[in-house]
Image 1 (cartoon, one colour):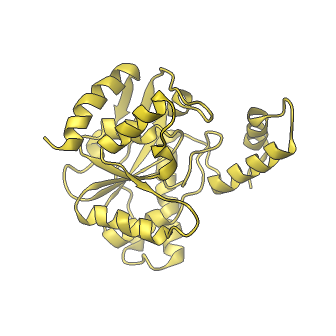
Image 2 (cartoon, rainbow, N blue to C red):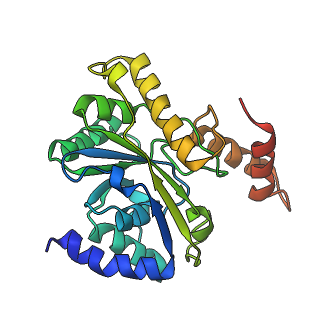
Length: 250
């Protein structure tokens, strides 16, 4: 048994006991060969649940901050990520995003399953944000099928600012591979990458039922942080998030 298999044999039963998981459409994942799992992103704990449910080993390139040593819960989470084969990437200034994508492409060239969160960061308010076009570059460059994934409930397990997970049910839906044939061989074209990424995000939205926002999550997060800095007292994150959810659509 591989290290991944041995780790999963321990982690998966524990995770399913603590957080009952309802998964649909797992049969859409090819039994062999390269495949990209493109998922919405609600919580830092999302990779763990995808790894538990998917029958094949899944590789994510996760931000280095997820591998931090902190309290007991954070250390346990870090050990779980590393045990199931996750790679960390340094996102400090000077880190090449193209280098990260090349590393991802190598994972697919080896015939493995690669997991990616095309929003680039967690949703700040539960909505589905615009996808980064690196996803399409990866799919069109490798020829790997893209299986859309929708998670729900993980944002209530480990919401922003919380370090100890709470016990709740988790849901996951996998869809049929997205048809990217209209853009085959066009990885170098920006418009094709944008259109292919939008098609994948639309497939994720159909599975998740989330409201879709034509903006990047990182931009909205930056606005939240700026507004938080300008407010004191009771006007904290929840109130600001509610205003964005109700009033910001552009």
